[in-house]
Image (spheres, rainbow, N blue to C red):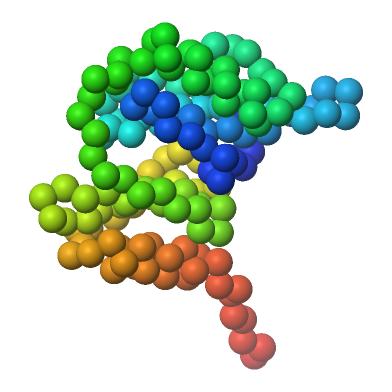
Length: 150
C-alpha cells in the first residue's frame, strides 16, 4: 500500500477499536477513503491493525467511518472488554494516546504515515509530564538540520 497520512483528527472509537480514516486514492477527481483499525485494549483484538476488513471504500470520511462502525458493531471481539481511561491527542499530525493504569501514565505514539508505535517504555507521574515529553520528542524530530560552512 502506498504511503498516506492517517487522518487522526477524524478517528473514532467503536467497540474497542480506534477506526482511523485515510485517503487511499482518487476516482474521477474525487477523493476515495479507507480506514484501518487499531485495538484500544493493549493490542489484543483480532482486528489489530486490520486495513479495511470490509473491503468497502467511500467518497467521504463520514461515510467510511459509518462503514467501519457498522463492521465493528457486528464483528468486534472487544465489545465486553474492560475500559480504561485513554486520552487522544493529535500533535503535528502524530497520534498520541495516553493511558493511566495504577496511578502511572504511559503513552503510544503513531507517526502520520504509519501505525507502528514509536513509544519509549517510560512511565510518568502525571498526564501533563507525559504529553510534554512526547511533544518535545516530536519537536526534536522536526527541527531543521543545521549545517556549518567550512
